Each structure stands twice: as C-alpha cells, then as structure tokens.
Length: 213
Length: 233
Image (cartoon, rainbow over all chains, first blue to last red; front, side):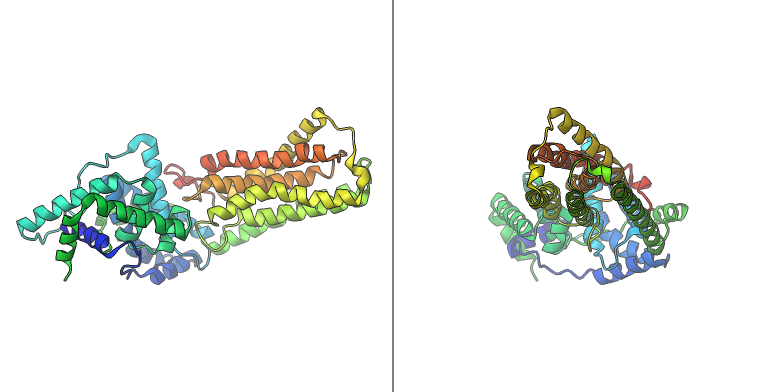
C-alpha cells in the first residue's frame, strides 16, 4: 500500500506526462501472441506470464476484490485465447488486453455487481517487507486521500490517469484502450492530475518529494 | 511511477490453462481460409444476382439500361468500400478509431446520394416519376430486406469482439449492410425521382446505421457471458 501511495504522489509531483518508465516486455508479448496465433501452443504461457501480473494489478485496483479480479483476469485471458483465430499480424497485444479487461469490469458494474469504490481492500496487502509503522500510517493515510480524490473524478479522467500513471501504458495505448484520441487522453490525464493535486494539496507533494531517492 | 505488478495466484494460472485445454481454438491460418471462403461465396452470390439482373433487361423497369448499370455499379462499389471500412478491423485488434466508424456510418448514405446525383443529371428524364409515400415505404422495406443478410453476416463476424466502441462499430456495420441493400434493390426499383431516392433508398441506409447501434450494443460488444461463445471465424 505504501509503495502505491508514494508512487501516486510521485506521479502527481512529476506531472501527467504519461511517459514514465515503461519497461514491460511489449515486444515479447506481441511476438508470443503472434506465435500462438500461428500455431505454437506453448507461446500462450509467455502471453499469460507477461500480461497476467499487470492485468491482475489493474483489476485489483479497479474491483478492490481479489476473487472478482481473478474471475475477470480468467475471462480476459480466455478471450485473448479465443481471438487466436482472428489475431491480426503485427497488432499490439497490451492495449487490447487492457481494453478487454476494462470492458469486462465495466460490464460487471453495469450488471449491478459493483464493488463499492470506497471499500478499502488493499491490493498490495500481501507484501511481507513492512516498513516502519510511522511510514505505513502516513502512506496509508495518503493512499486513502488519493483514492478518495480519484473516486471524485469523472470516470473518463480517472481511467486515463490510472492507465497512464498506474498501469504504465503510453498515452497512445491508453487512447486505444479508451477508444478516443491521444489529445483527449492527454487532456483527461492532465485534468485528473490537476484535480488530484488540488484535492490533496501540499502534504502530498511533500510526501512525494520525501519518496524520491 | 507505475504501480508494481501483482502476481496472480498459481491456482488461477492452472484454471486458465485448464480452461484453454478444454476449449481448443483453430489457428489464424484456418481462420483466414474460412474468411476467404465466406468472401468468395458472397462475391459469387453478388455476381450471380448482378448477372441475372443484367441479362433480364426488364429489371430496368422503364429506366435506361445504362442508367441502371452505372448507378448500380457505383452503389455496389460503394458497398464494397463501406464493407472494407466498416467491417474490417484494420491493423489493430481494437478495430478502427471511433472517428473512422462515425465517418463510415455518416458518410455512406451521403455518398450514395452523391453518386446518384451525377447519374441522374446524365439522364434528366429520370428526375420525374409518379412515386408516392406507398412506393417510398415499399422501397424502405425492400432495402431492409436485402440488407438483412449482410447485416446478420457482419454482426456474426464481429460478434463479441469489440471492447471499446461496439455501438459505433454496429453503426458502421449497419451502414455497410445498408449499402448492399440499396445496391441490390436499385436493380429492381423503377422509381428515380430525387424524393424517392432520398426517402426510399438513402433513408433506409441511415436507419440501418441507427439500428446498427443497437446491434452493436447487443451483439458486437464484448460481454462477460458471451466470451465463451465468440464466433470462430
């Protein structure tokens, strides 16, 4: 939890540029899906191993519920598997996978399965290397404030901010996931960033600065 | 500042791979062959219908045969373009951009009208006829009837495949199907006045695009329950 809080605060401090470090092996997953579509059954293990942790983290942050996140991740991976027959050579897999996960999540919400956003189930609570208690309390409090501030944003701004700042997608990839233009995503992320900074105020900035090496 | 990835439980991995093993999916090569076969069959049907209509000249119903050939050739060409633009996904698994789909849905009826106009001006005698509301209504229904087959085929092809903007995809599918319906019905309809063309032939294409929004929402959208029933082609 504290890492997430400090990371978010760091995002606010660094601005909504959407270019922060993305080191995910996208070429690897694109290549693996390409091989899987071409008939290499074993390549799906690579697709799963690269995508599942990112999608699971995303879905946990969305649902705040482990069993629901697992269910959605399973459905997302099955959908990717079933698209093997119509996979387009050279197509990007990561934004497509996030778009599937997001759609399934939103579809679940529409069906009245919404998990209360305010439910504070910490997706990172399984971490074992707990830092000192003061840091934990401060980070926890900060995370709660950030979550509340995020919850108060329009869905479009929240989604753009999360995809870029939390999930590490590029602005172009986030635009694909959200079905809009790059300019619109930049604007939404910037507005979200400004709103969060305004809502959280100086203490966050101080915490962010304190988190930098 | 990306949040760290969260490792999913091992048993989830097992569940996913078990489910995949129980539900094998053919490779892309197989899918390509199936799609090619469908396209070839559709092209053969279009060629047969077109050829039969041309052989049986009376289908012109008082119109100059050259008018029919020129107008219908243009409208069928438009239908091919609308199908490419509205049904194919381009280079992305997420399909074409939303603005592209809006253009396809909006411009297809306009393009039908725009291609009819020069043909009508070439044969000005066709600008007058005795069509009335009943004739307009019949042609709307006939265009819907001719478009039904392509619309069902397009919807099946894109079933449960769009996680981003399924309604717009549906609108584009509806417009493309409408273009095929308009092209097919233009072979048979003897009325050629501007009012009839707009109300009887172009309006139903716009209506089909609107119907496509509903179809997109119900059929094309990726949903939790239809993940297990996506079309295999």
